Length: 142
Image (cartoon, rainbow, N blue to C red; front, top):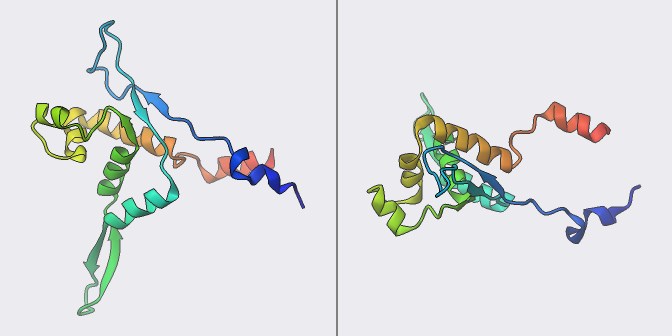
């Protein structure tokens, strides 16, 4: 049996926020793309977001029976908003400048479709969803 002290919370390496230029269209005074800040959320927060995105879908041929179905697009959109530290997507002035209400609508309005998809992929990566099972097995062997 191994030493369990390495699993104590005070010994765990904290997940640091990541800086990422989501778009080349937002530039600072030196004409360099402004980095957005993305944080990792907790599994509890992720679970709450998933619960918000579950829809009841009727089961064909079974009257009154429903099956839960997660709206994946809604989930990753909400996940991206929850993980975005900077810019503040809930800022009223920022939302007003794009003539939208709500952080999710703002994020979709600020970015082009390609930038939005890239940003969603980066958010998932920051939260550890990018690691393939084969990579984890290989890492565990080392």
